[in-house]
Figure 1 (cartoon, rainbow, N blue to C red):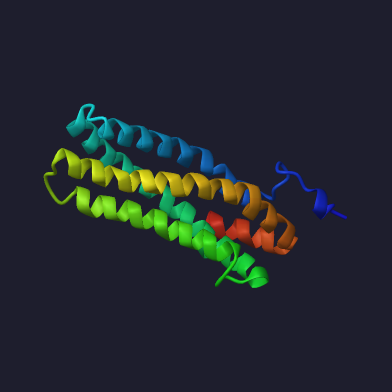
Figure 2 (cartoon, helix red, strand yellow; figure 1 turned 180 degrees about the vertical axis):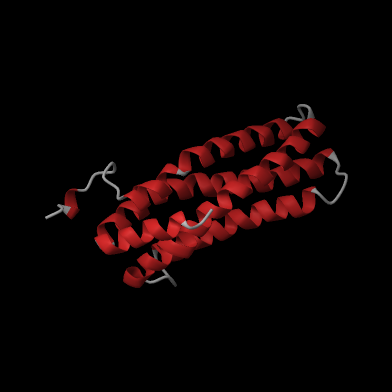
Length: 170
């Protein structure tokens, strides 16, 4: 017996552990983005920090997108077989992904459109702050609830399939 009820946080299968292991680097990028938004809000080196924010948001999006795809395209549907996807934890996770991505996309679409006043730059930076708050909370939910739930729910065969499928997404 694997002792499903007593499974600790450190005993994740390889695929789920990989998803979790992607969070620290994304978190570090998010902290950097948030720090830039704070400087913009305080009008510290406004032009330089706003331009740096655009560059770093693009880099973050490039790293976040494959992580999201591994979850949305592989993990969530596999879990959805057991708990559904139209309500409950999977629906919440997908909604939060959508909200964070919408804030990031709105920022990038507008930020590259031209010159902005100080107030407009601050308003745009708020979109990244929104994404930061959504994703910070979201990662905690995944790490403390969703990943352990997946570990208990998925069979060994499904865990092997999860690993194989997420390794295909770059």
